[in-house]
Image (cartoon, rainbow, N blue to C red; front, side):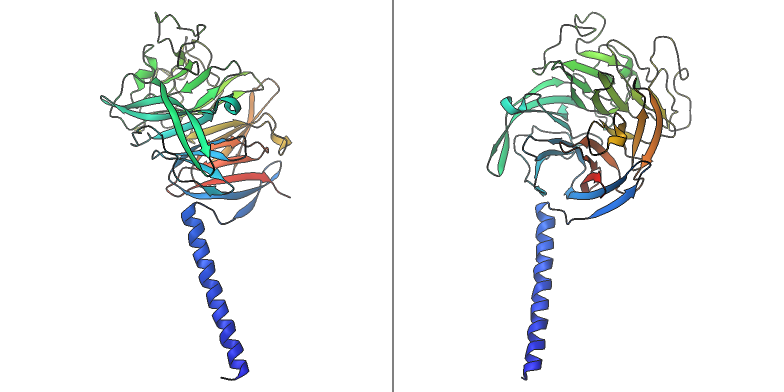
Length: 393
């Protein structure tokens, strides 16, 4: 073989080996939870945004919570909890209780204790199986990490919906710690609308409990005479987003309507938000629901959508990366596959809406503000992704 032929053969061999190594690396990245870097710049009304895929390969991810060291907890509706660290998804964290992964049910929200640095506790919601079917439950556990491994210890269910049913629909649910240390829990009506009006039923409600599951003495029905002691508010169809708003110093929620009538609410103690007596939506058949859009004794939403966008995760933008969005509500949407930015005035009144990233990522399940002021999204897909939104350079 001449020198030229030899060199050409060696170059071809090196190129082939390089391609094989690259393909093996790609396969390894995909199977271990890494995402190959992918980014795109989007124009919005006020700022250019870079969207970067941080991780992929999640099965219908539901919630993300940032840990103090920069890692993050991620839940998958199928019942897995994982840790995202430096772009890599861990194996499922052992210790998650049995989950009823049916329909809209499964492993749902997750938040850290306000004192996580000292107590190491996390709180999560899930569809709990039991007699009659399943119902929304809240558990707390200690997250123990040793090197690259992690586990849940001392798992305790601190709230469990008493009436469990076979319905696969409308479990809620989001968790929000208030500044006073109490825990708000948003639930759904479980596909049975009038449960949202039963004052002794925890479905279709906002609940308020202590971190150990006990009842705050200043709850509106703490004595249990006129309502369930854990109740904060009633008349909610299916709460999918919740945040404690630093602008109004109050809880703000998003919830699904039926065909139209999705709502943003500010649930207050002892008040009734109307479902299914009043609603801006209609039945999926097109039939009227309830008695109209307003009636004495029922609260109006801060904002509503018709047609439905299927609102999901909710965040208030309080970071420095996007000062143009300060105090705005960022709402994920499942049906329209977008993020709605709701602008507000100094008193928290919603003044307008911008629909961003429509159809770019898929069904948006969660929206969270990261410690570095970027915004992270989860996509509710079989191959779900974690997406980071940052300011374009």
